[in-house]
View 1 (cartoon, one colour):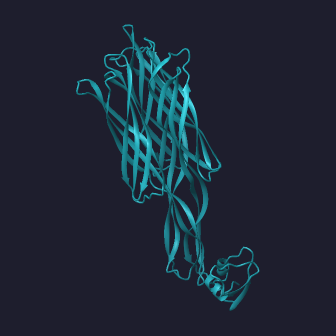
View 2 (cartoon, rainbow, N blue to C red):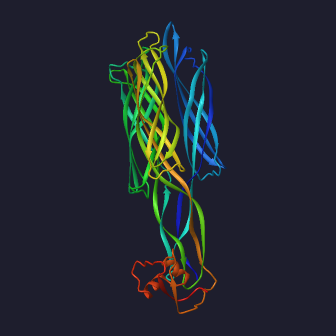
Length: 520
């Protein structure tokens, strides 16, 4: 007897491994001839970016670049002024991930730690610090299971529904942000752009049948040195971002989250109608990566038999990644940076930059607690005629809790944190900080489950009939399906001959008439 099997494909995402490494950053740079000597380093801004990544032979190889923007004080003709200089450095690193192959997905996070700029001499500086590179590597696994048998009318199946977590391939998109930033007449003309910052917030991502709509707002801040004077001025604006992407199989009820990365930033200063440098044209590229997951209910064959023939069934055990749940939380982080007696007193905040990092995470009943740090650098003006600008830095701890139903401490939490808004102001001689930090997490665990992967008719003969009927006494734990399988008959035949109700309930010590063959 030949069985025509109907099979179904089970696909799932498996977290193969996590790893991180600290890469020492140490670069020496010469001040360009067009700029004056370094007297004091005011600020250092480091923007790391991944330019390429590949997975092979148990390793994840990462390539990227870091843009360093140094703002320093120089003394010329007894006048002290701030001057910016920008350098670019390339890097390459490798992380070990057991079992990694080139068909795997990997997510890379970069975080600058303890970065500082040291003056070697008046014409040379050294940038030193540590960059943490974190990698999460995933593998898309798949295997076939037996779903049904074509024309298997005499086969009896014991089926039960099973929920399988499925993850779609990441959906990538690109959004170009553009704006014309006009400098008001109450501010000085633009001399030279010193630095920039982009924070993306107010994110609204919606799935619909066959597509996704992404909306967000990019807060763009430009720091420039005034034309004809020593002032440093910051101007900012909000740029709306939106994009629609089509993707077959998307449905509104699927769970999802989207990562945003500023991949490039360009600017150009031009004159307005009055012939003054008051217009800054900005164009930047934002890459989005949307992760979609959903639960698919599959009717699994737990057991099968045939009254007419013996069956050979092959069940295999797989290590399945189960997604318990995911969530996100928006936190308002506040803090005060105390300006010490040895620091110039602040008059007005010019610009604030910040980065967030996760230092610890803990899973308890139904929630994930994330401990993080917001690192802030604040550039401010002072009332001192000589030291007219200063910079102060601090770290502000924060805690975020994300509700995930069913989460327990033996599960794994994959967490991320993003800075969406940062404001700084002078309050009673100190610097007051307000920020919005969005944290997100996905909680998962591994479970071993058996699946029927093959089934064929056996050459072994069905035991021959020993009696026309048998009286069977129901034992504790018996089911009607088990009894029918034991005696190579069907539930329907047992229910019919015993005049049973449709639900087929049986109780211990109950006596049943069994038609057909009996096991020797």
